[in-house]
Length: 163
Image (cartoon, rainbow, N blue to C red; front, top):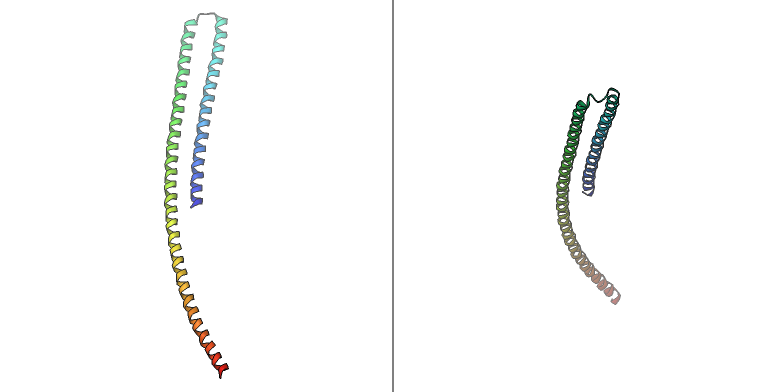
């Protein structure tokens, strides 16, 4: 029973650790993706600025529009990353609840099994007590019979020597 409880507890720990690792990896992946996209956008932006310096500021309005679009895209990516992090948090909360429920079930099972073992031990103790009492009675009867036999032998020995 103890091994079963330990295995179940170890299984829950493993599940919890795996989810934490998945959450951490997902967060790192999202952060890396965002960083790469920002770097790409920055690199692209720098290229555009260099080209504008060469050809002048004719495209200034279009560039402002592009910058606004890039900003919106980054903002959308930021929101999406936040939503994914939120979803991971909900998954973790759900896993924690499941773990709590499993631990509660294990605790109840352990308490039930402990109670059952206590009743079994009590029953065994009573049987042992009854058996000991029966043995005592048998020994007393045997000793009584043995004592009677010794008395008879003693009387015979006395008679033999008294003759």
